[in-house]
Amino acid sequence: MLRIKQGDTFSLDAVVKGDGVALDITGWAVACELRTRAGTLIDTLTATVTSAASGLYTLAESAAGVTASWQVGVLEFDVKYTLSGVVVHTETVPIEVERRVTV
Image 1 (cartoon, rainbow, N blue to C red):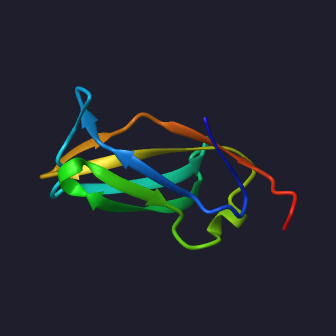
Image 2 (image 1 turned 180 degrees about the horizontal axis):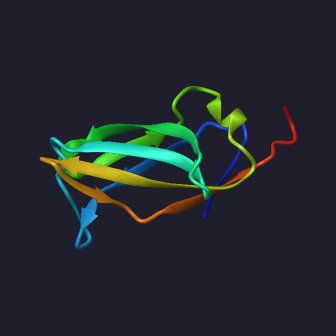
């Protein structure tokens, strides 16, 4: 499980693979939402393709410092890939948000 403390910077590098090999994601739309397990939207994460030919992208919080308002507990996200009307989602990823002690 991923872990983050409220107020920390959230940035996660990822690669799209098929059969263990990086896929070219040129032309793909990548989207990601962070939600409570009950489905309440917490943040629409920014997905930035960093190297389409190598299948690389980065997920980040929607704005600097927004994680300070993420609620403590287990949240979850998946990533939605869209190409030419075909939609595929990743598995759901849990992320534990902990209360920060030092402000």
